[in-house]
Length: 172
Ligand code: SF4
Ligand code: SF4
Image (cartoon, rainbow, N blue to C red; front, side):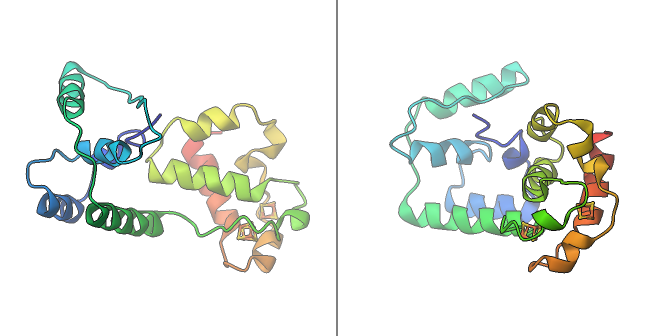
């Protein structure tokens, strides 16, 4: 599921597109995610959401051919993916040091993982869906900005700002 990460992997910067085109000039950008999956032998079914007939036609065209990535292409693609992720997400390692310091009892690493997901996909459905099962007093909006967690975070993450931004983005 979500091979294109809610469309995020089809929507690259000009520089990122140029890097992919340099490797396979004729490959469409969204097809790279599918070619990556074709390179994993255990993946037998790919579920990709499509918004219109054009996308469906493109996907059918892509899957008419089996063109898995070479080792070199895979290495380049993963390096690109790492760069993309590093630019956007907060470097929470889920060490859990902060948990016992939160007076609100928030599951900070899980919330940050969902925040990262939400930022990376530019507002996908995964975070809102996951948080819909949370009680109100465990949502990002329950953060009181005390920054106790920040005082012990080895990654020096500004958790209070992330929680405020997350609550704002979710409108919760
Ligand atoms: S800043 Fe927010 S998340 Fe961090 S300890 Fe305080 S209430 Fe918890
Ligand atoms: S202390 Fe920092 S790195 Fe560790 S789980 Fe909390 S926010 Fe993440």
